[in-house]
Amino acid sequence: MPVMRTLALVLMSGFVASPSMAQQATTTPAPAEQSAEFDAVTVQGVQPGPGLWQAQKNGHSVWILATVAPLPDNMTWNSKLIRDILADSKEIIYQPSVSIDADIGIFKGLFLFNSLRKMDENPGGQTLQQVLPPAAYARWSPLKARYLANDDKVERKRPMFAAGELLKSVYKAQGLGGRKVVSSVLDEAIKQHGIKVTSTSVKVKIADPGKALKEFANEKLGDEGCLSSAMALAEHDLPAIKARANAWARGDVTRLRQLPIADTSSDCVQALMDARVASSRGITNLPARFKDNWLKAMDAAVANNDTSLAVVSLDRLVGKEGYLEALRARGYEITEP
View (cartoon, rainbow, N blue to C red):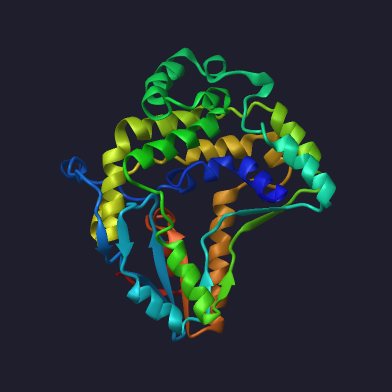
């Protein structure tokens, strides 16, 4: 793995720890009588996936694919609609992320890569039992025994990274999140039609990667809340996560809007942005910067192309402060699926 990609994963652990933790939950909670209605199993076989939103301006269209993570492992997406749109599209806009870059030579890169290998561990070799409050560790222990019984190394990981390992195992046990359902289809169509790919990443240049890694290794992140959010999801929210995955697969947008979902990202994002190693290097105010980058890319696409496709998580798209409302405020006509 390239050194700077690894560094990005380390510094951005609050976003990549798990699919659900990479999103800002803005969906409207379900009414109480609906919140208990969850699916017993995950769907299988060929499924239609959701319909698309259409954003139109000055006679040009950007189709919006809203994604949900995790998705059922045993489903096959009937992607004819999206393939037909991509065949006519000049551009695809990807959802926001963070891109970290640095100028380093190959030998320095190899040195830094070796120093990265324990960056997910607590400073001073402490264990989770030592860094977590007793009540939090008491919650962690049964979850670790159930989902990570054979992973002794997780006990030395920072809470943020332990959260990622927990949710990865939880989703695997539920038959969720193990396959690239959406990206594999998009990648194939992009290659087939030679479609322009537009990144909406927040780009961060790190001039001192060695110093950054050393700071990260020694800094306490205050990320216990991130692990607490992951534990709450594992303890209480799996039925909603599963039902949400099924609703996406079945194309049930109404159901997707109704399902309650815990915001597992905010504590992780805040812990990251509060870290000196991140905030001092421009990794700040990320949700607003993500939104701004995506909206600017939409404006450029609708100005330059008759038809384009944009991808964004459902959680960022809908809601009172979601991207859809921002598009309407910019003069777009929105057609719901």
